[in-house]
Image (cartoon, rainbow, N blue to C red; front, side, top):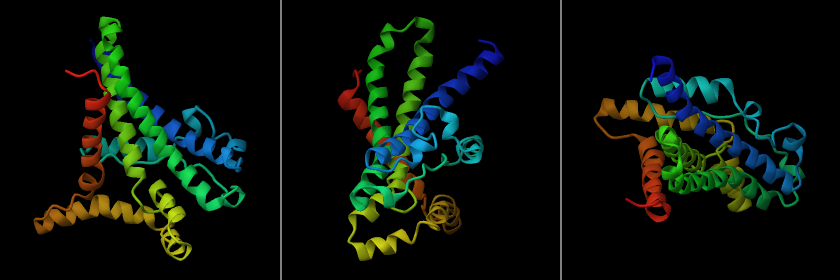
Length: 229
């Protein structure tokens, strides 16, 4: 395989599963919102399988690429799907459905990728490695998106699920984190490990909350649904 071929091979085994994971995650939010009464995302073309409608140039491409190149935690975001919660038929219940739809889609895609391993022996020999690595990365990216997004801090999906579940007085307090929640997450993911290294402590919050569960759940899916050794 030449240098160009090796480069294309490397790009495609990462880009294809990531694009599918992000695109279908965001489209699922829009589809769920439309089913629950709000067609805002649908009218804006966000209930779409076209990745260009969901990709944020910095959050989806530049930042994850830089972090991956530096060996850091995989972190990024897509364009948020616009949802007018006042148009939902049952706002608190439907908020949970809309928020959970994205991570739910990623869990389904991870399971499909595990089941796709059964087809490896039937692929043309020259494509087997490429196909398997796409499936392996699809399992990783989809579980990463599902578990990270279900951290119960707004504006992550888990935070919105929490707001929908909590009694109204507590929900209002949690919802106030919406604007500063992403800064809180960045602090936990990047500043806490730096502080931990300075203090000689393990403060790798990403490993505790995301990386570890992704690895454990991935092994569980493969053990239960995969083809075995």
